[in-house]
Length: 286
Image (cartoon, rainbow, N blue to C red; front, top):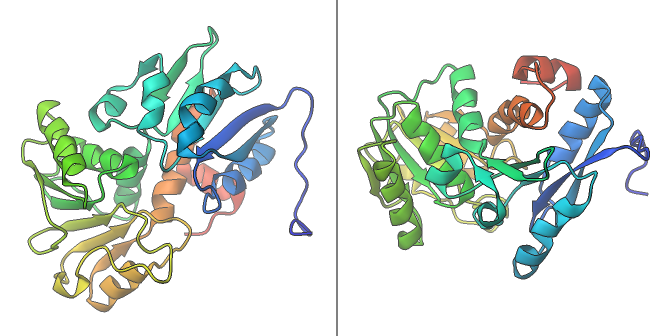
């Protein structure tokens, strides 16, 4: 009876499906936001989480789009890099980052993929009055979301982007793509040491579990540094709380989440919505 008190979804024979594909999916908030949004707008569609193990993804992922009323998908960890392989066409951002989090099935059945994490992140910064232009930025984590943010920061005019990851090969490949695509000339593999940066972004899952260590040595963060986290399940992550104690400006992951909504809607064919309008429609509080 876990759904007691919730309004039931209205599902018809013509309802369109937009799955959220990931592993795990217990942390995803997209179904809550988008199903409420679709109901408010009057769109006959639902967003459903689908938990697909990595070992099954190459078989199950592409097969989902053979279902005629699956018109698109949202992709989360760890499948953002792997889904690039079955796209028919990819955006320039996907090519630069090597990851995809948004797929639409076009009228001819072909699949187009884009990547919205980074753009959503930068829009969230801008909404908070933070402009990354000219900033030295450290992105901790080079997976799908980290790659997207690194690309977007470079495109927004960051003067330097350091990429830190325990997988230094992954970090090196991302830094190389940033340079080779002309996105950021000063892109490099970094440690997680936060000294000398204007903006530090946690793009790892560290902070989802109570036992997780902090992704950076926060005691070494300067008070002038903006510290951001991409985790959406928790607004004030341990990293953000510790950074706030240091006097830093902090930035929550939910801002990226809500700023991506107009981008997803547009990709899926629902034009004309802004993040401010969406906030009002679903009662989303700042």
